[in-house]
Every structure is written in C-alpha cells, then in structure tokens.
Image 1 (cartoon, rainbow, N blue to C red):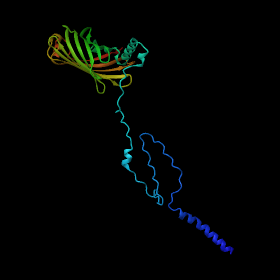
Image 2 (cartoon, rainbow, N blue to C red):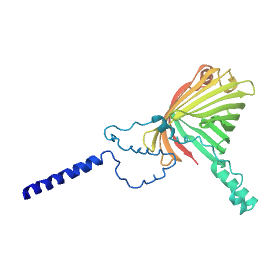
Image 3 (cartoon, rainbow, N blue to C red):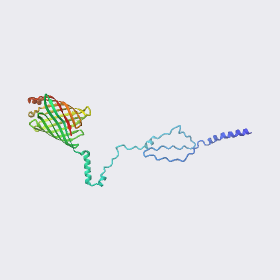
Image 4 (tube, rainbow, N blue to C red):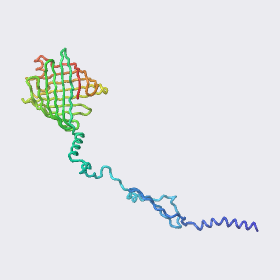
Length: 326
C-alpha cells in the first residue's frame, strides 16, 4: 500500500511540468513595459523596431533574418552639404574698430596695412660683373650693373654695362620702366644711350626679362635708333649650385643688327656672340668673388670693322671679379 502510494505521488510530480508546458504553448511571454527609443542624432537612420508576434504563432527570427527595405532605408539618409559649395557670407561693411577710433587714425592704420602686404616700395643695386680681364698679355676691365626701385608690379630700372683696356671702349646706360605682367615676367620700356664708342647713339628700348623653367634667367630687348638703326640682344644665365656656397654660372649673349653702322663699327646680321663660365664662392649672398673664362667672337661686318681697327675678331679672356648686391 505504501509502495503504491509512493509510485502514484512520483507519477503526478513528473506529469505536472509537462502539462503546464502544453497549456502555455504559443502564449506570448510576459514582457516588461516598453521603453521609448532614444532620440537619434540629426541626419542618422533610426534603427528598425522588431514587430510583435501574434499569439499562437512561432517566432522564426533566429532561423530567418528579416528582409530590409533598401528603398525606405535610402530615403532616410540625409546627404551632407558638399564642401566649398556653401553660400559665402556677405562682406562686412562696417568695422568694430571704427566705433572706438577716429576716421583719421583708422585711415592711417589701413594705409600701413596695405603697405606691409604688397604695397611696400623697395630698392636693389645688383653688380653682376665687376671684373678684371686678361687676354694675350693685355689687361682690361668690365662691368654690368643693374639698379631698380619700386613695388611688386611697377619699377624704375637703371642698367649700365661696358668694358675697356685703359680707355673705355664701350659703355651704355639704360633707363627703363618695368611692368610685371606675370609671376616671372617683366616688360620693360625706355631709352638706351651709348656713351662709347663715339659718336653717341640713342635708342628706344623695348624688352622683357623672365625666369624660365628650371631657373634659367633670360633677357631680350629690341633697340630702335634715331637714324633708323634696329638692334637686338638676347642673353641668359643659369646658377648651378655645386654646394650651398659654391656656384657655377654659365652665361651667353648674342647681339644682332638690322643694317650696317660703320661709324660705331657694327655690321648687319649677327654682330657678336659671347659665352662665359664663372665659378663664384658666396661668403654671403651679397658678397661673392669669382674666377672664370670668357669667349667672344665678332661676325660679318662687325668682324671686318674690328680687324680694320687693329683688333681681333675672336679672343678668349681670363676674368676675375666680384658679384655683389645691396
């Protein structure tokens, strides 16, 4: 009897959980009260909320992922503004400082600001060549100096160059107005006056100077004389930095003439060509002694005039000099 009662009690204990599970099959589990979603940042996409399952249906979310509506998803994306396409603000028409200082003080301050940001007038004197020359036992000298004064756009330029051996053989002075037309190019207009050789000549000068790619410096000019003579000149140079202080500078110059001018020993066509090579040491950028060699050749009628005057049409010179500026 006791054994039968024990077996009945054990059977009822095993059957109770199974009966409770069968009775609650498909019923939604008890859930805590819903929590409202947090506000999403502006421009972001709100996460999709899971839909509640109806009572009595199986939840297969773990076996099959939900399908996403890409069209709705794209509509919710807010594209940012493109950089640089926003409307710029209006230019301020008033300044806060005008309310505290007089008009005269503000005009003076703005004039100083304009001058320090591109309106400054500066000057420079550049002696490219101040040198002693020697050829076939004959000593001589040469100079090539340029000075200018002005701003970034407009300048006044003075040039002079010449040479001699004892007496001055050639000497010329240029007075020019220089106008910047590009970052590296200046147009120059003015006068050229030849002091030597006699008789003196005056020319209208039209030219340009520029900095070519790879830092080649180039100058070119056309000279129109009072007697209808037309001359041309092209010259260029390049600084090859062997070290930070040792610089090798090749340079070349070519002179041309439209017609003969026997009075000053100039023939038509290619009249003269000159090629030089100078090695300088820059103790500072403003002070650099140098040594070098210079080859010069006269052509055509100019060579004939030189021979008739007892001079050589071609010569090679040793040069030693100073390049300086301030």
